[in-house]
Image (cartoon, rainbow, N blue to C red; front, side):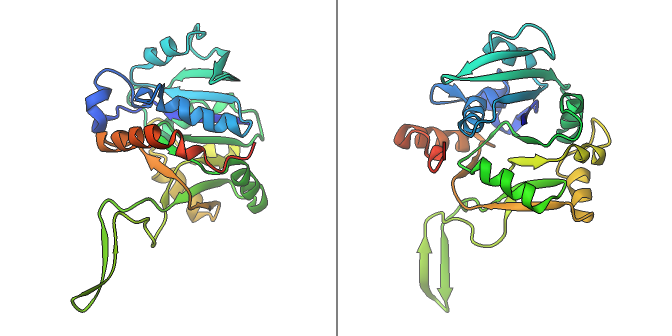
Length: 249
């Protein structure tokens, strides 16, 4: 099964790094975050990657040294795991939905595929996600997460604090955690380059009752701003891939 990683955005909110490199190439520990993401998929046996790049596309080509020309697949070892990588320049101004549609022809007819963003790390069980998707038989499945709150939470009864928690996990409501799996029919919901994945395509799937959510309560972290990168770096140094816990090999 092929895995598409959306890795072409400008990453303007992380400008401390992205003035020089694409956000997916920002390092956590020794490796760019995109390598951590790919390694997570590799841990579950998914080893065919399509990188939908755009902004500073050449940096991806230089990093994956075996790359020779646009849209050419090649073999590469990532943390001692062999995989196939195809790098596609999907344009600097293309939106997330448009990037996905730009690589449509690389997905065989009637084949299911996975896709995710190039800035989110999780220990989601990808085999369970795949099983859930097949069981529900809908066009697309999104991983739903409940991230930690940005601030401490207090629960009051009149003026008395009955609960005090420092940055607890959000207990109400789920958000899009990335880590999708979809049938190729999902491409029909994307009009073109200017389509934002989270707008018309996913809203259409929802309206047609073809979108289901796989709930993940484990580790999940998105690298949106420098503070997020710094927190991931601390986690890496302290626990060495906390997002790798519970991986079934």
